Length: 202
Image 1 (cartoon, rainbow, N blue to C red):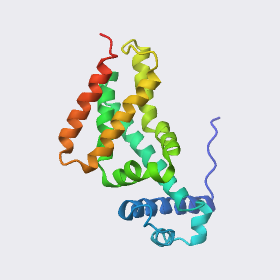
Image 2 (image 1 turned 180 degrees about the vertical axis):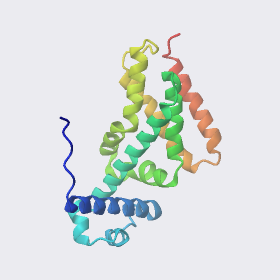
Image 3 (image 1 turned 45 degrees about the vertical axis):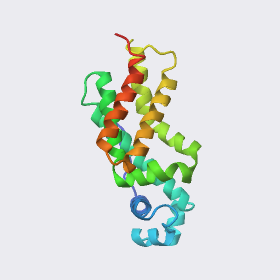
């Protein structure tokens, strides 16, 4: 007999709803005003919760910001994975996945919160930890698959993944400020493809 999950209590449902309301309000405030200008009071009001409820879920504004970044990175990874799965060949999945990530980078909220502010607010180490759990993890898995299938001639696929990831992230950082994002994406894709082609078999 298959075991089913116990239904959530009203308190658990309320707690989850409160946390989600804070995440939504925080995302909007950070995107609109920036991390420094966004206040816990304003975020609490927008989420329609008390300061006590805020502190029940998050230690401080930085903790909320980190939770928002994690949620946005998880969403980005999901979108990348969904887009990549439309392709049969792994190389095509790689290209499509990069495109999907750059699409996300051009969205104002993601560009402001994740690309521009998160490294400074969270610190490079924590920012990279989050990134490697979500978008970068997909890139690493893809290059490992190419190496496993004999289509990539590289000793350390993980190192190559992180170096390619740095290039892609740089494109993402430049996109919101570019006068010609379409050309930047095209040129960036060409450079990334040239690097990967140096390790491609066949």
